[in-house]
Structures are given as C-alpha cells and as structure tokens.
Amino acid sequence: MAPIDLNGTWKLVKNENLDAFLKAMNLNFALRKMAAAATPVLEITQDGDVFKVVTKGVRTIEANFTVGQEFTEKNPLNEKEMSTYMPVWEGTKLRIDNKSNPEAIDVVRELIDGQLVQTQTIGTGDKAVVSKRIFAKK
Image 1 (cartoon, rainbow, N blue to C red):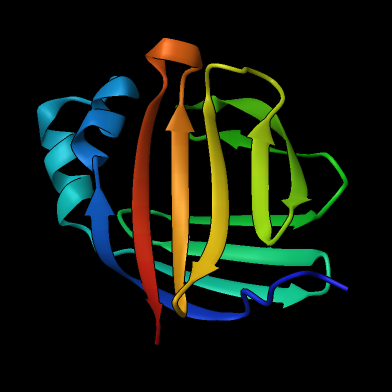
Image 2 (image 1 turned 90 degrees about the vertical axis):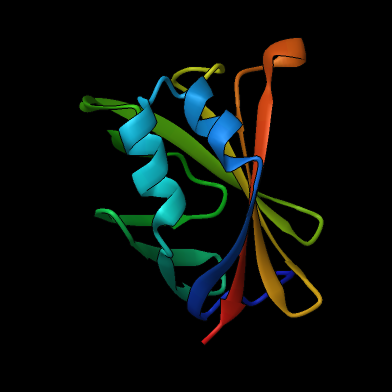
C-alpha cells in the first residue's frame, strides 16, 4: 500500500525560489516571467503505486508511471531528448530521480498540512538550486 494518497486536482498557491530555479534551467527572462505568472494545476490519478500526473499550465504534460519502475519521457529541458526517471517512495515522499542526467531536475512530492509540496532540484552538490511549489486541493 502506498504511504500517501496524492489523488485529486491541485492548484498552485505559492512558489519559493522559482526564478533562481528557472535561471538554472537556462530560461530567458521572458520565459521565466511567463512561468512565474502561471498557476498550473496538477491532476493526479493514483491507484496504489500506479500514477498518472497531468500538469496543466503554460503547456500540458502527462506522465504515467509505477513507483519502483523506470520510465522514459521527454526531457523538460530539451523536448527533442528522452530522459529516464525512477520513482521511489522515500518514507511518505514520492521521489522522482532523473537517471539520464544527474544534473537534471529531480522532483519530490509530499503532503504537508493538507497541501501538496513539490520540491524541485536542478544540479548537484554546491551547484544545486532548489525550488518549492505548493498546491492546494481543489
């Protein structure tokens, strides 16, 4: 049984350190401002360890995966490339690591006080940049 239930529709309510994170992704000023102004919605369908996550924002992205099994999808930094990811439970957190490139984006999702907190990290070590996106259930 999964340690948390992320089912539902979640709307962004707060960003933390998003601009620095987007700069680390090498996005230009205009794209960073557009991303910062967006209020994405996550539609998460979870059946135990099986997930479908649809992110609706500046663009719509869908990810389908099973915790504990690698999956491949377009790299968000370069849509012409594919990346391999590994989702794992880390206690009560869902961690999705980019196995294709350790310098790329890793995502951790957890529930804190009824909100979905998505922590995104790009880079490693001293060069890592961390951003949090906090979502409330609709």
